[in-house]
Amino acid sequence: MSLSLQVLLLLVVIIAASKLAGSLSHRIGQPAVFGELLVGLILGPTVLGILDWPVFANHHETLAEIVKILAELGVLFLMFLAGLETDLAQMRRVGLAAMGAGVGGVVLPFVGGAYTAHLFGIGWVESIFIGTILTATSVSISAQTLMELGQIHGKEGSTILGAAVIDDVLGILLVSVVVAFTAAGGAATADGIGLLVLRMVLYFAGAIGLGALFLGRLTRWVEDRISASEAVLALAIVVVLLYSWLAEVGGSVATITGAYIAGLLYARTEFGHTIAEKIQSMAYSFFVPIFFISIGLEANARMLGGSPLFAGLIVAVAILSKAVGAAGGAWAARFQPLEALRVGVGMISRGEVGLIVAGIGLSTGVIDRDIFSVMAIMVLVTTMVTPPLLRASFRLETTAALEEMAED
Image 1 (cartoon, one colour):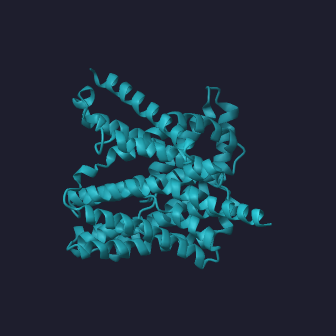
Image 2 (cartoon, rainbow, N blue to C red):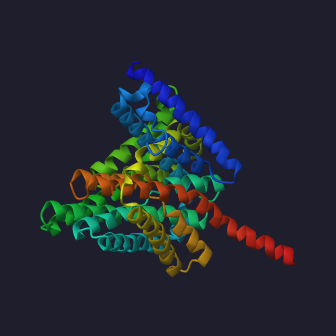
Image 3 (cartoon, rainbow, N blue to C red):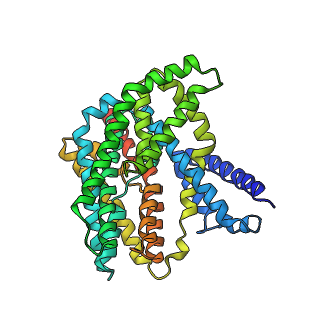
């Protein structure tokens, strides 16, 4: 069977399985994303190993790469939609809490991950990088769950999304410093780190400043002057992809940060609502299901070998340190305990960002394949537990209110 026919068949399986699993997840009271992540794990090498089936085996690596590329597009569109749905006024009001949650969500996982790894006899360089991987946050899963719950405009949703941007900047700085020290034998320079910070500042200033000034005008010009079908939607897609590309290449931050900024900027224009409706149809019917399934395809629990105890402890530290660190930062900014808890839970997922950071460590030789497998499982577990925990945290207030009404 040709590669193109294999791609078609694989996409049939992925999209159909994703939507069926999402529907079943809703029926048991969980967000659709939970079922989609779970079926990805089942289709992946941990259970069924779909890419190793005879019908796909002769193009295994190429198919995996195609799925990965489509998944990356999926997460970009998902974060663009999250930006479009974000209440900017609310985000400004929770700026201090977002900063506290972002910083707390980096410091505690870094320290906890590094010390946990060192307790198992792993050298300090590798242990520090493991701690660095644990600092990663991907709120794409939380954003999807918040949108399903109708909470993305709220106080906690705005804080989670704002904290994720801060977390991304701090995490990338940390990764860059650790890799630089390792590559240079501990001789990373202040000039190199300063240049990295300068690139980030220039990217954020340019992307936000130019976008705020010209994006609405450019979109209006395209609507008035370009007669091609769906020209405004095409422009929005171009902006998302360009901002995402520039984020990593120019600003040294994650591509999803660029997509999120593009969404924030479009939300300020008169075209935000129209673009959101059209992007949703395209993203949720095709790209986003592939992204959710791809998380499971990346992880293989069978590769853990003799390290289940280490893997289990790393997973526990990853969940608790991120939740406690982010919640503590929000609580210090005068959030109520339940509000702070929701922020902490919403920051747990490592998603594709955790896999990217772990992949950097593997490619540069900082960590070996066994450690990478443990990190992949950690990413999968933290990603899967976030939707049900986040839903449960929002149910707590409803349950308490119902109990008070019953007492009255």
